[in-house]
Length: 275
Image 1 (cartoon, rainbow, N blue to C red):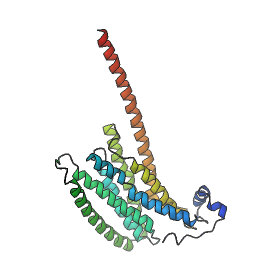
Image 2 (cartoon, one colour):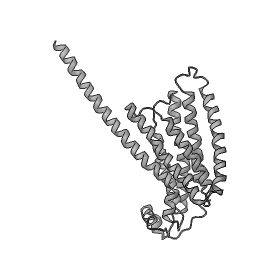
Image 3 (cartoon, rainbow, N blue to C red):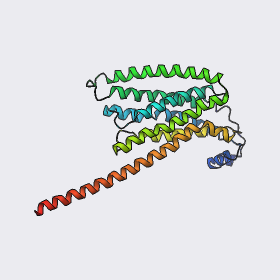
Image 4 (cartoon, helix red, strand yellow):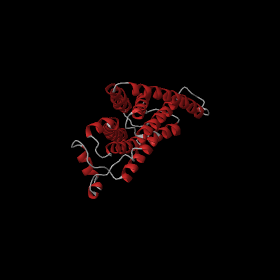
């Protein structure tokens, strides 16, 4: 258990300061650790947030019986990334159960979103059996994902460390970052953020921050190695910030356009009345 491996080397007053702890992490090698209760709380937070991350999107799709506005490409790329990361962290010598489990649940939720795309497609006229379709496709995707993760786990154990790092950490990081691009395209092409649940962003940011902190938690951890392990989480955080900025920009532009349109309508109405 990652919590059992935490050693406490810092003064009590320093333990209360996460800021000082983070600054020491980037010096080179940490000589202190977070309090055990804080590491445990962050680990639980990371697991719970990853478990709940796609739930707002799943709920939104279910209520509207539509996946319009949600990019399927985003879900697929995140799904592949989650499967790779699950196998990578499970095969890691310093295996963290919390991080592995969070990615596994993330993969399952992505599968549910993909199943909803099929169940709620416009060509389907019968909505009564949509839940059965979602359940059936989700179960199939879960079985496939589990089989692929097991195969990757065995491969990572046999592969050289450098190759394992590239396939299991670098590639998922690229997929996580690239997965945001289709969703950004959805926003821009539709000139709307409708259909995307920003509850995903909230849970994801909190979960990624917590999991990153857990990776840096052990005393004596080398910052460079911890940064490598936390690369997927840091990538998600950065891309969510960009996604939020784009959403705010679109909201502002659309609001300004709507106001301008309303003013023109009033002017036309006044002109007609004068005539």
